Image (tube, rainbow, N blue to C red):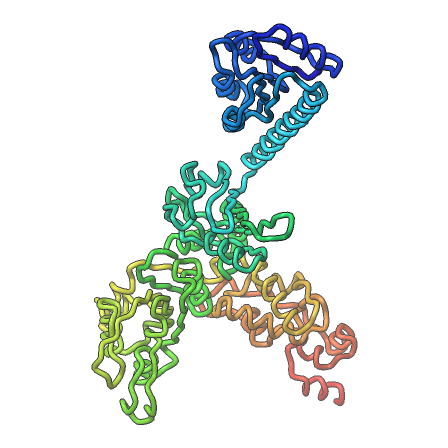
Length: 561
């Protein structure tokens, strides 16, 4: 399209002159003799340049000049006058005119001014389009974007940042530290670090609290912003909400395990849900389950999934220590408290302050220790052995036992008030025999673990071993399964675990009926001769002995006999 010019002058000779000058330059020229006519043109058509006479009869051109920019904020306006003065020149500039021409006109000056005005208008319009496109991109991205200057004043933010951080337009040019919000300020801290060292910083999957109080998991990247000379002038922060991804990952992970616990059985899925629900609840939890089911793993998951995960997780096996030693371990002692107390010692409860203490095999503690533990649970305080000073602690207690504490209360060997304090919430871990569908998953886990430990390439257990694992009652639960696979992993030279590398005790148990047990009986295998065993094992006498279930000396005696 041809550029357009509007001439606002009450002299027809001036209007004709501009047509004569600008017509050959390719301009479409419109002329107005007063401000009313000029405003009608301005309302209908956008102009590349507007020439306005300073005196329009009884009107002032500067009055029109102020109104032109309401029609077009990027208008290129040139004031004209036959009576130039410094005051009028200053006034023209103050109201936004790009030039000031004196009558009579120099044709070359008019053309030069016009060409410059058109270039300026095109650049301004291009710049506006560029920033509109950039802002459209800026506003459409799913990440929150925050731009600050070198003084950490907020310069710009997108819609997501407004929703996420609560910023509004009135916050522009305000230092971030003065903007009220309820987050922990991780973004602001990292921005300060970037503006200090000039390097890119990244925080992966931190917890962030939105303006509405909702907690989210976000990843944060803050980059320095430099000018064309490389001077640091600000920083841009990009916040990516990864809550949905983390949730999906947890759901996918929970299909086969949770917090280090392996299992996809329906009972285990319910256990995972309970762990999640209890992780941030600071109440005492009692974990019940047979030996070897993974009570410590459940306790660790409760700690590491909750708000105390950044604090200490202290473990105590109550059955492994005598009463005096257990008392000293739990509460500490002062020098000289008893024979051998040559220095002060901090107890496990004090070490766990702010975190979690896990009391395993709680059913084995003595009545005296039960009484001391009850006080800690009730009052959150204790004294070290040999000391009268009271120590206050903030500790979450998780206890575990393979015993029936309710029965011990009935028998009078366990305090009922301590039982009720411990048994606020109870988690019951099913034995392995009740979750046999998890055995393949556990076998795969242990094979991977011991393959790496012993630098072997063990892929799986063969069909016969898998069958043995499925019919055995596993009185030692997952711990026993792990020991069996570790034993077999040490002995095997194959990529498949076979029967001949399994522990003899396990084979004896799985092939021999136990009183009252029907699910661990394996039909006896057909008898194998010594020759068949040696042939099967390629002449390896030790393997042949294991295959036959006899000692190596028996093989040698048979061969020498």
